[in-house]
Length: 403
Image 1 (tube, rainbow, N blue to C red):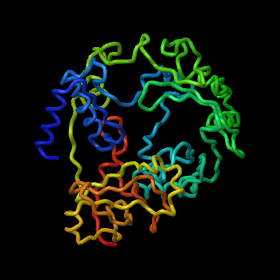
Image 2: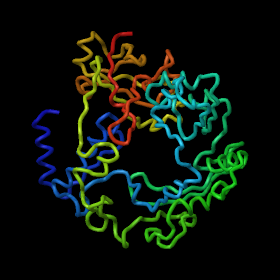
Image 3: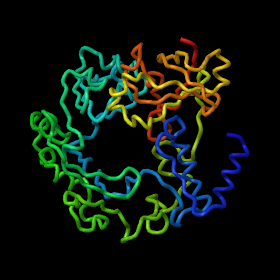
Image 4: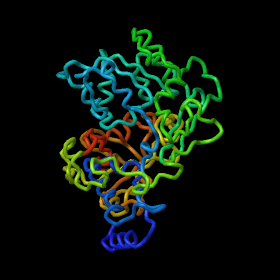
């Protein structure tokens, strides 16, 4: 983006009202991701865009709902000193002979790590250990479940009762099953109830019904529920999460939960937890010249049903004409995309929609689309972002050549 475009955007944002910013999902997936999000989120405060209808920020709506996650943090369930491992690091931990105690068992559910985790090849080596006991539960036989010693069939959301907090809006819904569980499939709640019983866990939390779990997941006394028990939210409508009967509006009826109650551009909380009083920037050091990005597809928003697309093969690699010309590459030819972590083979699509220095291919393809057993996740580093230590998929650096 050239300087004039940046200046034009800044001028529009300064003068227009209301003006709202949304960052979506994925911007944070790099080593400077937390700082980048903080910098974007500072703009409405600096430009005075809060406190008006349609202004401010739109992002995840988790705090619009009266959730009760603190009830899970019982000391008797998670004793002090219990080890926790970052899921980004699972591949490293599974292949680390010095890890004490070693990871001896893995339970994979609601997840397809072989396809979506960074550093795919190392994770597969870890899951392939003969001494590792792997249990998997899913609605289909994913690439990850192929590593499982035991597979437990899970049911779909059509087959069990649940509460659904919206992904970006402030509406709560409840659903009942519309078909019975198919075959031996079970919802997660029932699978874990049965496992808890077999392992001798007798606490009432491990015997709670789905309705009891719903009532425990949200604060039934919160005004946003309007006196309704979570397990009795009407099935024929969504329940709006309002504040005193009005839509939530930051700095009108909702305020930041910082110690000061204000926007804190310099954050004591983040300084104490991550050493990040202010946003910062760390360069990506790599000998590979191209940035690989792997966005979601309008055909495949998750990898769970990627098996439906195996026959179609992998999505193409998109590249700017100048980068293709410099490498003697032509549209439609097969290329190898590689770095020190792995190699993926794709068909090339040349497009000036892609910026120079960037290549792009869609995420979520299964191993069956690949002729060498590696997909895009094999090229992504298992580094940590600066805040919350998330995955850095967008820090993948690669090169491309004719296959």
